[in-house]
Image (cartoon, rainbow, N blue to C red; front, top):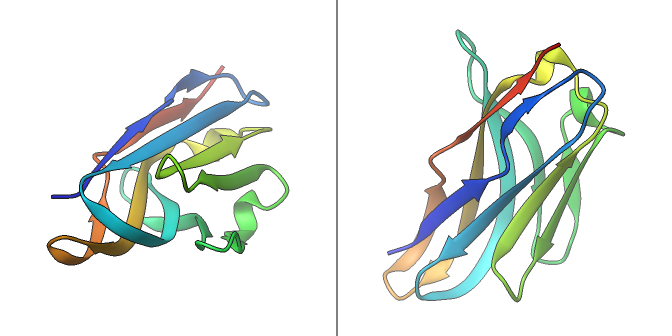
Length: 119
């Protein structure tokens, strides 16, 4: 069974920075895409950033130039460095990973971590 555990959320002032981490555990053969999504109260979950196994990245327009997604394939971990945070970045952030393991293909989500940007 594949599990994703996120960490690094919290309260930060506007203009500040946070780094989120998401570790994938289980008997995994390979992880293809990994990424971060977020959901603010009353809004739909939206893509923040994704990264392929080869390192290609994709970002939402709203975070380009401020957020950086990266991954450590040896640790099955994906990161999200968030700089110049704005109040509108406040949301629950979820990581996602898709790949294959002993139980076949998986497309799994973490439990979410709260990010609040406020003075």
